[in-house]
Image (cartoon, rainbow, N blue to C red; front, side):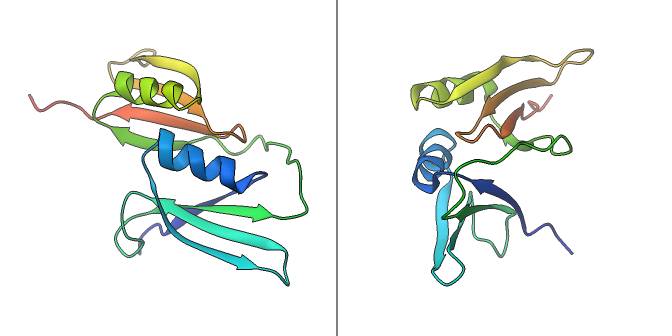
Length: 130
């Protein structure tokens, strides 16, 4: 078994695709409209779905707002350089909510950004080989 994808609901699919592609460097892997159900599914990620976990962006055509649940935490992305990743998000118009730096009570460098719908994305800096 493996994790295939995580689904999040978005209110503006084009805005969300712009963020995930431009600010986070993901690729749009596939996109399917379901006119009878009035929704679109777009899958984004860093590699083919057969080998990588991806994000499913669900756009319900008639929904203009979602309330953020309190159980969902964040999506974590491993990055080579958390500082550079934050700069890339900011340059693409994204919001950095916790600048890169060591985590509390530890040494791992982390940062948090938000996607256009307010979902938290954590950058975890890959540890350097010793």
